[in-house]
Image (cartoon, rainbow, N blue to C red):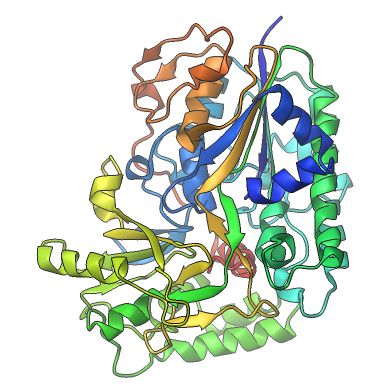
Length: 531
């Protein structure tokens, strides 16, 4: 009987939240996977953002080889930024490799699978898709026969509604979103043949962004009442996982994983304010006129709930992508990038610093020293946990286009790309701001009849791709940075490491999003605090 693999992603899951729930028997299915299989820490990418982590998940390579370090990708030819998507990947995903090796694949809501690749199987797009429509799915018949009939949604209520909508209502809505998604999974799992099945619970990320101060028992805002409300989502998530486990056969290996972890954020730290104070960053003499367009746009969004603003922009001759790029580069930060020596231009949670000149060794040392010695004046605590120097931390042709350094914040801190005019430190207002931020340590459990039972494995998200290929009996391309997790098997898979030239795709393909579609995705990312 053929070997199968079921991968279940639970976005941002972390042991700090899961362990007490497992101990209290709130998550019996995850508990079963942990007790009968191998469990431990899955180290994410630097930075631990969803598109970066999933690019490495899909391809098995580090960011220096796939070139993705944020939700946006810089285009040197135009000086603009655009959203990343499936077309941005420089290597074929392990799902595509499996498909090319005659394996049947079903993929649901996996980041960086829009536009959906034409696999030997079924692909339903992800949260970087603009909307649910026929082009969101491959093949189209899945949209017509299933998604169209059941009100399939990408995500639930915007977290910006937290001031007006109760946690009970938002959590219930998120539960319904994932219940529908996993119902689709059960239908496809039963009605279609498959060797590799992948599904991702994206809503857990939103739950923890919005309500981590109610989940972390060390938080001053914690209460049993609020905890019980938010934990309903985790209990429902576990139930949906159990429903899939009830369907699979004994020859199926299961990998439960998260693309990054989470932790409570208490203080924001402005990288640009630090650089401005040290005179590495220069402000513009005056704000750009584009700010006026940005204000008009925000006003229209408040009063327009039906998307009529797109026709309004067209009448004014305002190109959405051009406006977004201008606002992104120039408006709220009020920074003169051309005259500055160093600045942060994108990212969240982890900080990053770009240099205008890569040859100033004294400048590099001074900036590293400044952040390494950064102390919170209120608590006296060190703010930076670790500094990742791109040239030393990555391998591949794209490391030269990365920021000079990435800053891993100490516990409780979050780096932001705020205006240079603002204070360096600012307490997070949980009533108005998101309380949960990404952490580099996610979770993994590996379960199946050929899997050992032990704790505390520590592996990297790049290890998933070669391990899944090995489970399917497919030779692993030699360009992958990840390794086969041989220590989890009773009997090691009989596969080889071979040349993977045919799986390298070179430059990314044509960008697929229209201006209006890109606007929809960016709005969703803004709701989640990523922009």
